[in-house]
Length: 90
Image (cartoon, rainbow, N blue to C red; front, side, top):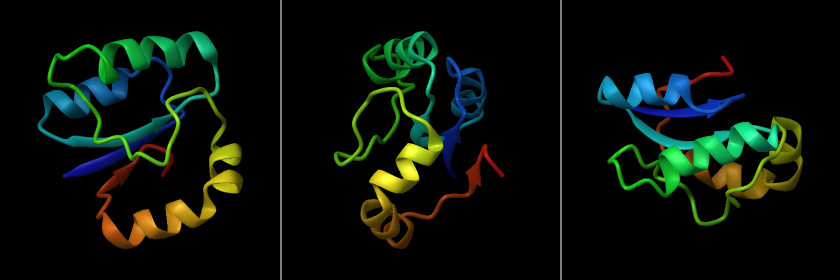
């Protein structure tokens, strides 16, 4: 099962989903400190909590609105290639 964590904060929901056996595709958070914590814990920690982060998505803080407006083409392709079972924005 795959998920995208929108409004992720520092990654509490992602941690719980990963511990439950889910696979994270990517996360979106606009607050810098929270995103840096998420990045340190999930992207570079080597703890097996890594996301399957797409190459086209920068690992920087951003709003969901910015993601949707700047990566529309990539998200469209991503939707066709990946089955996302859960988005925390739903």
